[in-house]
Amino acid sequence: MKPLICLLLSAFMLASPEWHNSLDEAKQIAKKEHKYILLSFSGSDWCGPCIRMHKEIFGSDAFSSLASSNLVLVNADFPRLKKNQLSKKQQDINNAMADQYNSQGAFPYTVLLDAEGKILKSWDGLPTSKPEEFCSEVKEAIGVH
Image 1 (spheres, rainbow, N blue to C red):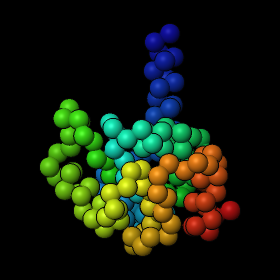
Image 2 (image 1 turned 90 degrees about the horizontal axis):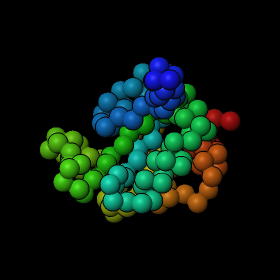
Image 3 (image 1 turned 180 degrees about the vertical axis):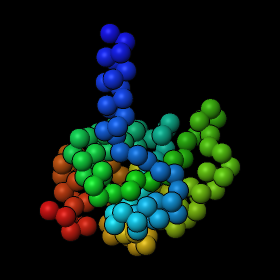
Image 4 (image 1 turned 30 degrees about the vertical axis):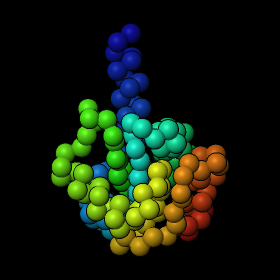
């Protein structure tokens, strides 16, 4: 039974898209792989809509499929609980991303960028649409059908 559980968990981990913590790294990957960047601003331990966004939209099969072939994902997390605090270096990186792309401090806030960092589309708050509809908006913005 335990080997089966490990196998299933491994398959799930492989199916989940990888989230990066650095926009500079994401830009390099996006340029190399001819992809776009999806930057998510979240509060992983205090923002209910952020938690739902990651679970319901970003955790969906439709999004995983879209992301694996078209997107480099970046999560700029701003946790509040002491036990979840980021390193000073990561907090500085996240603050710089927020200064550039989320100066209003909205959560959740999602930005679709080209490989150079130019904003193509943004979403303020938790989308009221289903994951498939959110993916359609992303596809439309990047010209994928």
